Amino acid sequence: MLMNKRQKEILKIMEEEGSSRVNYLSQILNVSEATIRRDLDLLHEAKEIKRVHGGATLNDRQTFEPPINKRMQINEKEKQAIGRAAASLIQDGETVYIGSGTTPLEVARNLISRHDLTIITNSLPVANLFSTVNGISLVFIGGFLRAAELSFIGHIAEISMNEVRADKIVLGIPAIDVKAGLTNDYLPEVRTDRSILNLSDNLILVADHTKFGKVASAYLAPINGITTLVTDNQTEMGLINQLRDQGLEVIIAE
Image (cartoon, rainbow, N blue to C red):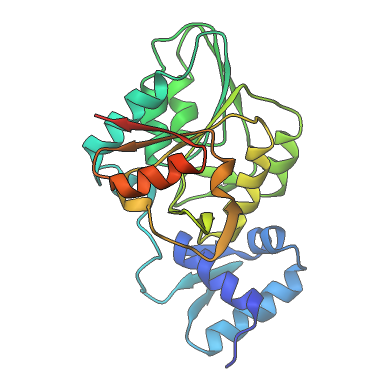
């Protein structure tokens, strides 16, 4: 079977999630549920997936990337250092959008003792962290749950983001390249992240050294869209100098 672009995107989504439902895929890919059912049937016939009631699952294949709960211990010390450094850029009284992922979560952990902050997020772990903290106002962005990342994405989330603004955005990204910019392999999340970028002109990107020199399939933003990059001390200095030449403020967390 020659897969069309939409069917390839369905496979990519399922590699991220492990399984998916017809109504979710219909919403994310902006096609009818009948079209999704036909695509799933064809992928099932090609033994790419296993069809189940209301959706499909993978055929015991390894997912594209580990889910968030399995990534917590990867480069843990570097992420903790980045979290401390990025949190120092947040001032009391500000409104901050904190995105999903393990490194933005470390930033959030360093903000729980602050006062008079407003936190906006689509991340369940971040929302849970602040849900009982006094002195911090929490605005939670809902939508379709991306189970692997414990975050909410999609059309509903993007509409909600039209109603809010932030002083600063804290965002993680899986792939950074000086020429290609910020990219991601998960197209539905990229669309949501583009809405997040409209919330403020001040983007704090948090990324450990493993994210650099990579180019994924879905484009998010140019490298000069970053205001401040916070990374760890294992990132190559030559690359850091290139980024600084682009006008970025680069902070090396120790």
